[in-house]
Every structure is written in C-alpha cells, then in structure tokens.
Length: 227
Length: 227
DNA sequence: GGGGAAGTCTTACGGCCGTTCGAAATTGGC
DNA sequence: GCCAATTTCGAACGGCCGTAAGACTTCCCC
Image 1: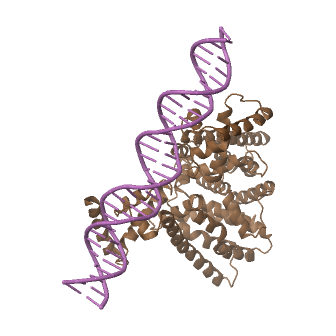
Image 2: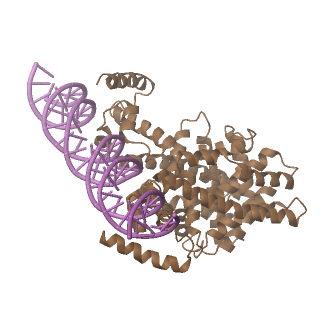
Image 3: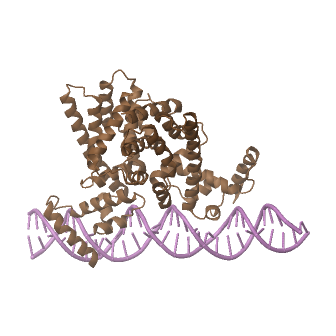
C-alpha cells in the first residue's frame, strides 16, 4: 500500500503540470505508457501484468479494469501507434503527389514510407520506444494483431499504387516484391540488430544519426527499384 | 500409457527404415524434430514441453532427460541449424573466391550469403521448417541465443571482408550498412510476411519459386550496393 | 542369466500467470 | 453534505508451466 501510493502521487503531480489533458484516466495513461515501454524492451510474453502495474505504480487490477485484458491492452497500443505512424506516412505521400502532379518519383514515395519511422528512431524522439513496440508486434504479436497485419493492406496499397504509377514499365509483381524487400530493410531496425552491426563494424556504424541512416536506406532501396 | 506407446512404436518403425542411423537416441531425435517444427510454426513461448512430447509421442520427461531443459533444447536446435547453414554459405563463398582469384564481385558474395537460406525456403525442402526456426530465433530467442547472435560475428565477417575487398572505393561503414540492409531483406522471409504480400498483390506474387525470388533479391541488393 | 547402466514412465511440486470479486475509497452532481 | 457512480484496492482462484524425484523397464556386457 505505502510504496505504491507514493509512486502514484509522485507520478501524477508532474503529469498534471506538463499536460493537464486527461485529468481523467490518469491511471489508464500510466498503464499505457509503462506497458508500451516494457513490451518494446522485453517482449510481450516476457512482461507480466504485474510488471506493468508495478512499473506504472498502479494497482494490479487496473489493466483488466481499463483495457479488459492484457491482449486488449497490447492491441490498443498497437492500434494507436499504427494509426499515428500511417497518418504521418500518408500525409507525406500526398504532399509528394501534390508536388509532382499526381505521380511522384520512386525516391519520394519511398521517402514518404521510410521517413516517419526513421524519425521515430532518433535517440531523443518521444516515439522511439513506440517504433520498437511496432517492430516487435510484427513478429510476436497477438493473433488479432497478426490477422490485422495480414488482412488490412489498405495503407500499404497507397504506396504500391504510387509505385506502380511511377514505374509502369515494371511488371506489377516486381513492384510488390521490391516493396517487400524495402519493408524488410525497415523492419530490421531493432536494437539487437544495431548492436550486432556495431560489433561487426567495430563501432564504425552509428544508428543515432537517423538522417544519415535515412539517406543510406533511400539510396539502397531506390537503386534496388532501378535495377 | 497405451496411446503414447503405440505412437512411439508407429513412429519408430518408418524412422528406422528410412535412416537407420541413430538407432540409439531415437527418442532424442523425435523430440528434436517435433520441437523444431512446433517452435518454427508457433513460437517458443507458445509451445510447451508437453506439446512437444505429445507431438513426438514420447514421455514428458524426455526433454529434460535428453537436453537438460527447454531452453537448452531450443539452443541445441538453433546451434545445429546455424552451423549447418553457415557451413553451406562459407563453402559457396570460398568457391567464389577460388573462381575469382581471391576477390569475387559483389553479386557472387551476396549469392553465397543468400542462396543457402533461399534454397531451404523451397516448399519441398527438408530444411524449410529449420529456416523458419532460425528466423524466429533471431527475434524471439533465448537470452543465450541473443548473446551469441550479437557477439559472434565471425561468420558474418567473412562476408563483410569479401565485400570490403570487392568495393575498396566504398567507405567501410557503407559496406556494413548495406550488408545490414541485405540481411534485413532476408530475415523478412517469414510465412506471415509472405501472406501479407500475397494479399497485397492479390496472388501475383509466389514465394514457392525460390529461384525467381533469389534472382529478385540478388538484383535488388546488388543494385543497392552499386548505388 | 545376473547385474548394472541407460532410458522411460508416472506423479507431483512449486511458481508465476491472467483474471475476477467484493469491499473500500474517491469523485462528481444536486 | 449526501448519494450514486466510478475507480481503486487487496486477495485469491484456477490453470498451465518447467522441472524433478523415484519407481519401473529395457538393454547390454560379462
């Protein structure tokens, strides 16, 4: 009772100062943030509801009260962050379409796809942990998440359509495969993979400079599409 | 007692016929094969020791008796398949080196890296499930597996060294990053990702033709390295 | 064919898990 | 300042898990 109550009080005070939004549902937010962080760092199965509520300084029953179940919590985090990320991507894509009278070049389409997640990857970006969560959700996700990932391709279709228009000379399957390859490059941006890369290059590579990383990825993928 | 014993008897007979090797340690092999398959299909945490022993038709205690623990079993599968895969890769790389007087072109280096796993990916290949296991181990693996993956880069260094020699004009970090991108493309070859790709392309893509997939990947990656 | 080693079997222990329940506390409207 | 609704809390339930212990069986060597 005592330590948890103190933690709640200590966490609520600055929260209310910084962003007084959601004065209601403080607990729900504490759970959401703590869960996202722990899931991103350690995986869904390795983080228990008790871990989450302890880290958030709230009661054990909070997860089930506010979200219904652990899986529903995972899904809500996944859903909110996915919508947020895809909104940024779609905005960039439409800007590129407007700039180029309906059909932007391959590089700009890929930039719209890759720039938002790479921006999130920056060490001081507030969505850095969210991106790791999303990457992890792709391989370890719930049954429901897996179903959504495989079924709902409406977001991805925006990009494949734009690419088909930008390269009408290429067979359609070629476009799809190359988009698949590009997404593979992106989803490989996990902490563990960076660590291995740093060991291999003996420190010559640094993922902290996301601008440089974006340039490298765009150059690689654009050349791949031009092959 | 009765159903399990019958299952063992039924499974042992054809096993002994096909490959009479390991007439000893039949049970150990049954566990190994069943575990690899279940882990590859459903993930490490979603498969219990009871699932494995039931599928193998052996006793529950077999896993701990023959392998020590569930984690040790996972590690042994990972280790054996990794050694096997890397041996094939290294052989191909050395053949390429011999063919080209010490410094093969980028495409041949990448082919040595990608061809073995893509061969394993073929629908009728006996290592198809092993490859899925290895891909999964990369993201869901044990602490020990994760440590090995991040620490032991000796195998990968063979390829980065060859690439550095093939493209001495490129900065070293550029080589490392592009190798990282290429591996990302490779590790994205999961069943779930293929399914999504098939939905997106409305059936125009098929991962069954691994020869075509290899060509596509090599063309994409080689162009990326030439950028 | 007797004895010891290797393997198999049943059974159960201890532990962590997600979830639930009823009581207590807090909040907000009148 | 009271009542009802919402939220928080402590506690526990049922279940599945990995692992271990001990009895039993099989096999092989002397």
